[in-house]
Length: 284
Ligand SMILES: Cc1cc2nc3c(=O)[nH]c(=O)nc-3n(C[C@H](O)[C@H](O)[C@H](O)COP(=O)(O)OP(=O)(O)OC[C@H]3O[C@@H](n4cnc5c(N)ncnc54)[C@H](O)[C@@H]3O)c2cc1C
Image (cartoon, rainbow, N blue to C red):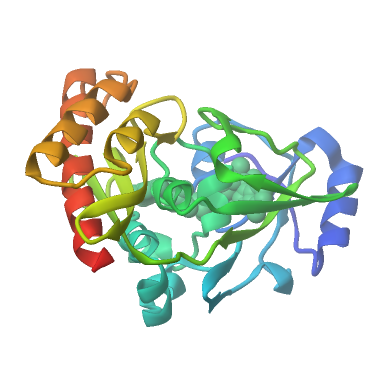
């Protein structure tokens, strides 16, 4: 593996200064579980890594109605938090099946989202909860709704000097439930497809729903046609079946080493159907 210099700034402004000094030859590193693999594969060859590990303001999470999640929170801590599980079951379900305990001990939601893999397991739960991403750079801070953050595989609307600092999940109102499901070739693998659902119910009627799927398009995708089908309707088995069919037609998958396009369409529909049922059960 190519050698690099490693810096560990203790606050954001030191990190920005280092990034300004080393420019294109530098990369931020969080847990390193994506980045180091890419360096080993020679996909990227940075001369300098600027670690975000020692920046206290990026760590941890708070549940206070909504959730304020530091970009450097550790998956293992999120997975073990009962408070997080109660506040957003879909996110904790996604984190709990992401990779393996060794990876989850060091990997972060900031890295998962900034890496912008179409299969990123944190993305669908954050899309359905309409999370807002706070990004800071030398010029200041901005808030970005997650739906506009991803621009393509590995591409986001952040520039190379910016750091994703915080993920804010708004408080849900009414009788709302969320769920996340994933299918991989084996357990602990990157998703063939994943899906998250948020259902806000009034009796059997869906007042609001948000549906998202991953690994089925160039970016993690909100399924707006499925949402429109469900919202304002009494949800019975027939409508759930129809939602699965529409999900299968709305996704835009490709065939790759993990799966065929056809199977991804099929399984996305199945995951969406099951996640709707799960989220509805929790909304009670
Ligand atoms: C064996 C294995 C299995 C895996 N399985 C899964 C899986 O099942 N599901 C899944 O989704 N992923 C999986 N991954 C990928 C990876 O573990 C996750 O994407 C993880 O969340 C990356 O986080 P990290 O902190 O390690 O990021 P890093 O590798 O440190 O960084 C990833 C990228 O994001 C940038 N970055 C990191 N943090 C920030 C920030 N705060 N602001 C701006 N840029 C930033 C870095 O510069 C880099 O380009 C797996 C990886 C391995 C090695």
